[in-house]
Length: 294
Image 1 (cartoon, rainbow, N blue to C red):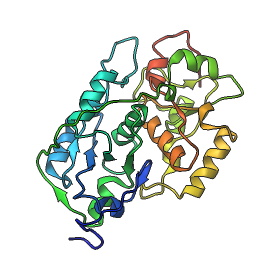
Image 2 (cartoon, one colour; image 1 turned 180 degrees about the horizontal axis):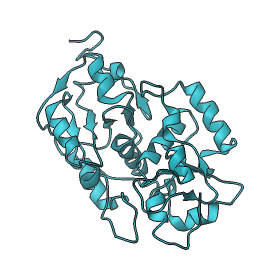
Image 3 (tube, rainbow, N blue to C red; image 1 turned 30 degrees about the horizontal axis):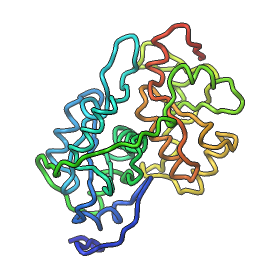
Image 4 (cartoon, helix red, strand yellow; image 1 turned 120 degrees about the vertical axis):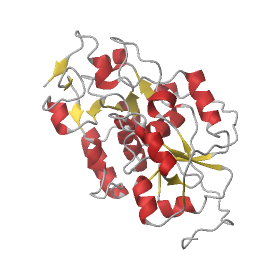
C-alpha cells in the first residue's frame, strides 16, 4: 500500500473544487466516496471507455461525455454538447452511485478540462457541493504509484434528488443581453487562436462572441497540467474579470465543456461560481443574426 494510504482514514472533509491524488487516495476504501473516470476523446468517442477498462483508479466507475453527460443534439438549434435533461441527469448520477452525502472525485487523463470538469459542473448545477476534480488526473495518480484497477466496475445505485441551481447557467438570449453590459464580463475559454478566428478546425464558423474577452483555460495550468497555485489563479481572474463578483462573470468555450474547467479554476481560486453559457460557441453560431467578431 502506498505511503499515507490507510483504509482507516476517517476524517470528514468536503472537497468542493480540486483534490490532490495523495489526499484522494486516503479515501479509496470510504464507501461514501465515488471516483468517476471521465476520459473522452472527441476524435474517437469510445476510446475513453476502452482506456478505462484497461486501467483506472481502483474502484472508479465510468461516465461517457456523449451518452451520460450530454443531452440530445438538435441540429441547427443546440451546440455540440447540450446539457442533459434534468431527469436524465438525476438517473445517471444515481446509477453512478451518487446520492446525498456522497463525495465525488472526477478525473480524466490529466488536466480535467474535458468531461471531468463537466461532471463537476453538472453536480454543482444539480446542487451537489461535495465534488472535486483530481489534480493532474490519472497521469498524476499513476505517477505516484497509487492503486489502479481494470475492467468495468459499478457502485450500488442511489437515489439522486437534485436541488437545481438554475442561476448558474445562461442561455443565448441572456448572453446577447450581457455581452455589452459593463456590469458583466464574458470570457472565452478556448485558445487564443480560436478566439481570434485563426485555425478553427472544429466549428463551421470562426471567431468569438462579439463583446467577449479571451481567457484560455490552459492559463490556469502549470506545464505538468496541474492547477497553478491559488494565489496566482486569484490574481489572474481578478485582473480578467475587473474584480467583478462571480454572479456577473460568464464563461463559454466551443461546446460548454472546457468552459466548465474555467469555472472550476475560478472557484478554486476563491472567486465563487461564475456563470456558464452552456450552449457556447457551437450554439451561438446556429443563428447568423447573433453578432460575431474576429
